[in-house]
Image (cartoon, rainbow, N blue to C red; front, side, top):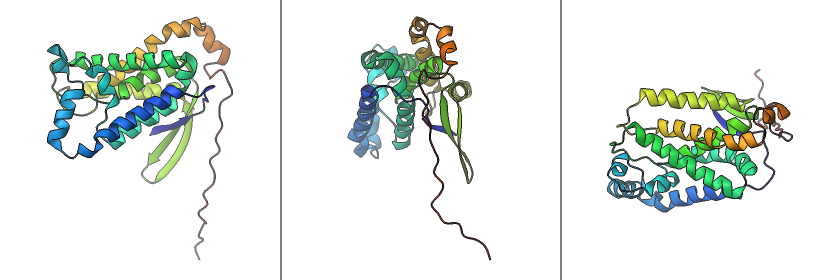
Length: 247
């Protein structure tokens, strides 16, 4: 189960969202050729990934930024870019281009610090844009709790697209990160659950002043939690595959 799109069109071209996507994809392609070389990749992660033990030694603070533009594989990158594409344009639309890039970077740094705080002496490299994107998702929850998000549900051979309110999808996602963080060890390579949870909460908190300036609860009341503009509609076209009848 994962989101494929929302029904919340933005009112301006999200240049920063597109720029961030291009930067992440471009940087990934720049080192894709050495990913099969274990020694080269270890040296690369040591230089550019966020390693908690390195920060504890007072070194590598720049990796709080560089690590959020690195990914461990194609599906890691594709998943993050999908979430950024779905949720990033609307937050950029509300904040404006300049404030959005600052918001994104701040969420990414706080997400890395949350992962660092769990085990400051961990030697596992942390990479990925998911902490920053989680902050975007936290902001989306605050501003558009009832915006529709289309979820693709896959049950073995059954595929269904189900529109649900964003707050359900986002709270389920956050709950999965917290449960995953509690059930995993920080000294094992895998998913940086606490970076995700920390980034999400950071995004929600950082957008609180903006939400309050918009009226706070009154902002929700004006639109009943929906986007303050008509929602997009999508029509799922029927299959063009001809039906074969049995004799």
